Image (tube, rainbow, N blue to C red; front, side, top):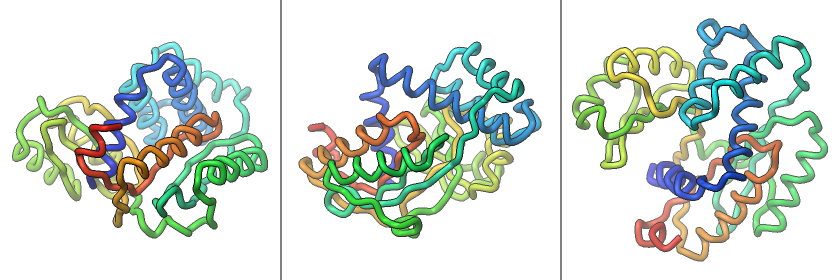
Length: 246
């Protein structure tokens, strides 16, 4: 899925500003608090919390921020967040899934709706684009852990479904319900992963030119700027030439 991994690369390139970093930290901390509140506060006994902590560490979130987020859940002073998924279309008919955690559904719904409208998109009903994606587990490793065959063998042994290897690294996909088991088995074989998380993997993609990509990135940036929005996924596809010009 070129779209997905290329998008990750763009985020990586763009996400170096301090403001974007502190926003990312607070979103990851929110996920940790919610996971700890819903289950056991011990990451070893709570797969969702373990994944949230792991993802935070992979983004260099400081240890004290992670511990504070867990303590907040244990202390009972954490806000009650609802997890909501919005679906809609961006410019050029690109499918967009927005995952949010909010303490005020009306506020978030109205902000997300107006962000779509202002940026050439439109918010649809739940399910309007979800059928174009599969819910999957995704584990990423740097290219340095081994060649494609080594990683493929480890992935098969771990019970994964698919591997994409390139000079940028290895992306391993598995069923969403198997993510905890697969990531544990992979770590036993390949060591610590760069990232382990649940994703929406596009099954069909929409090709964009440079202008289309610029419009889409404007929409995604505006959505991600909202503190209630945890994650934005799209099903764009773009050539390397287009990506290089962004």
